[in-house]
Image 1 (tube, rainbow, N blue to C red):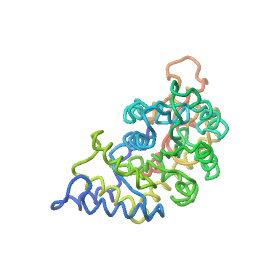
Image 2 (spheres, helix red, strand yellow):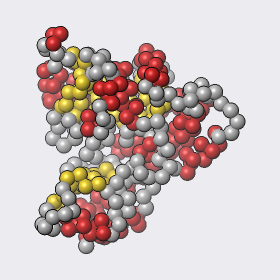
Image 3 (cartoon, helix red, strand yellow):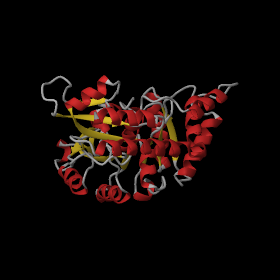
Image 4 (cartoon, rainbow, N blue to C red):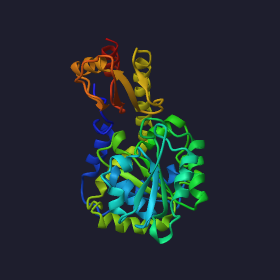
Length: 349
């Protein structure tokens, strides 16, 4: 019963088979292999963007930080949610790779910025002349950090605010496929058709061994990314193994099928937990992740029964069995219904 993270699941067998098939003979290094070119073509087709440029990296942090470095100057500030991954979980990598661009945190009720709050945050910066940071890119996370999915209208409203100030927009899509599966939209509808300029297109959380794609809809940014990726030590010499993973991921819609499976697993888990006394969700689990408040006694039963997940606030140690403790539960594509149902049974007591 492993609900700690979709990073912890195993690699999809079709991806391992693809790596094995590509592990034959020789191929040009540093992204000059045929597989990388196939992935470039497939992503252009998926995003309906024939001029878009794609670059592969091994980690989500590299994808976000290097993309934002290309969209921001060192004297600018990036606007993002106060609970954004780039702020809470990337050890200041965006600031490091951008050469010093800071982050301006936009308040959010749970995990989504509102257009009004974003507009206010942008308007408050760039007002002190040479003495203050200048306005930089806006970064939006989809799926958002507490498990909710921005609707297309919500994304469009945030992008429109950024464009009022002529600012570029980055989408942190670590769970991009989960959001698309939840919305039933196209990749183009969730990105450039709304005005988004760059996307971190996740794969590691959805069955890949370790690869993410950075997509720029303006090809003029491509060469800068190439230089920053090399300078930042994120250019793989044997790039064909990154490409093999992404190629398999994009073949026969494996990426969407895996995401839909993960989302369905979460829907099953959420349905089972929803009616239990003392359980409350911080946000509706639109995709494959939920933050839930559950009584200490319930957590103890689950941990004693072998469930693995993160407690975000509180401790199992304590005298009050009814005290609500906040946890995060994540389903990946591979977790079985038996594990989900056993978890629900233990929670119910």
